[in-house]
Amino acid sequence: MSAVFWFRRDLRLKDNEALTAAFAASDATGNNGVLALYMFNNAEYLQLEGIRQHSLTESLRSLSQDLSSKLHIIDVDSTEQFANGLVEACLAIGTKQVFATESFDPKGMAEQVLVARFLESKGISLHLVGSNYAVRPGTVRKPDGANYRVYTPFYKAWVHLADVLPKQLPKNPTWLEVDKNKVVPSPTKDSPIKVKAGEAFALRTFQRFQKRALDEYDQMRNRADLSGTSHLSHALAHGEIHPRTLLAQLGDSSGHEVFRKEIAWREFYADVLFHYPHTVDDYYEPRFKKLRYDTGAAAEKKFEAWCKGETGFPMVDAGMRQLLQEGWMHNRVRMIAASFLVKDLHLEWTLGAEHFEKHLSDFDPASNSHGWQWTAGCGTDASPYYRIFNPILQGLKFDPNGDYVRKYVPELRHLEGSAAHEPWEVFDGYSDGYPVQIVDHTTERNESLARLEEVKVS
Ligand SMILES: Cc1cc2nc3c(=O)[nH]c(=O)nc-3n(C[C@H](O)[C@H](O)[C@H](O)COP(=O)(O)OP(=O)(O)OC[C@H]3O[C@@H](n4cnc5c(N)ncnc54)[C@H](O)[C@@H]3O)c2cc1C
Image 1 (cartoon, helix red, strand yellow):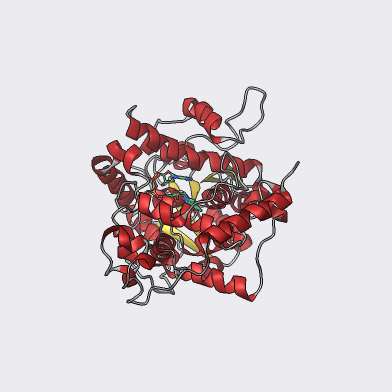
Image 2: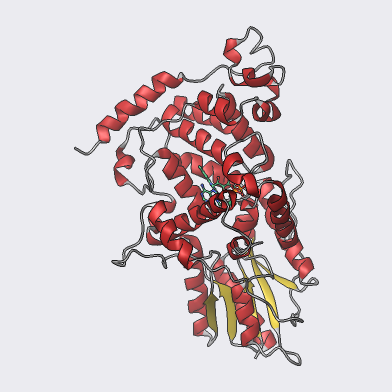
């Protein structure tokens, strides 16, 4: 019997466990094969910022091309409509089996439950196979069966369980066609950059990273001014590459080991979100909900300055402008900008996370919510609230020559070397219109620590 394959956040053909299972279940002889479907949620797409629209469209275009235009797009406004479309597709090819990769975040889980129930009512089964991780969230457990709440012991257990065996499709897979819409929808908004995406691009990006920076990854990954990281987060978030494919090619050197550990951070946060789904937009450490945060017109003005990259702190502003221009920000700078929002501006992490969600082309619910909560000090692991990043010292350390700041902040381009981090120290620092600091870091640091005392448990 043929099968329907529902592409979700796994927009690739290679090393796709659920797709391999769909072909194994379908009898790939004669007219049988697999019908490839994608649920395009029009209502959600229209809400996305330009870069995110373009990145999804490019991923789908590339997948459609890899399928010789046999990707069937079900254009809907709700999951219910999609479930209906899936039933029609099953009827059209005479099958009672749908395959998909299982989701583990709250939205994906709710979606697959709804679809499975609807299909079941029509006598069709939804087979959820594999995951977008090397280890299925919920699998890594302590000897007593409890889940891990701290990264390092999670990693030590995870590394022995991680699946590094890439999955293979049959040599000449048969893709079925039905009379359905196959046109990938075009973006309705402009993007400031030309987005490149897709499985082939992801594989090339990994190959280039292996040549360019993997061996020195442990030393270079924190330098915002260098291209020392893989830039694979978009591909991993859209499933254009599976972490298995990456892990399979890593060795034991220090650079490789640190890269493996970063892949594991993604898996740790997915595991944490699976166990605590409310933490996608709520506090992992509930006492921080009671911390005094600023609200009102003055707070809104500061938030706006942060979003635009006009806080007067060069490293924060460069990061926030990189986000708007490229839909991506260097990890170190994400931490600096996030810490600044919570601990210098006294705003809730959720505000910043929503802004990141709007603009990051690599948006991932688990990594975003928990990256924010870790930095804000209300999340997992040992990042205590009282550890407060100094945005100026961080800039001098991780962009020592000021190149990163000059790249994204034109008002500071006339300043040489590290002077770009401290325009207040030079007589012409503000001559090109760079804004003055909206707050004083030392004052706000003390204010944060005083507010922390109010929620400390004795
Ligand atoms: C406030 C904040 C928000 C974040 N939001 C997201 C998000 O929405 N989506 C996202 O993919 N990452 C997020 N991250 C994690 C990290 O910043 C990005 O994964 C990384 O910058 C992507 O660049 P890269 O692919 O070059 O990373 P590399 O350094 O090359 O790392 C390889 C891969 O490992 C994973 N990874 C690396 N660092 C982390 C980390 N700290 N946490 C989780 N996974 C990690 C990513 O999948 C990444 O692609 C966030 C971090 C912070 C501090």
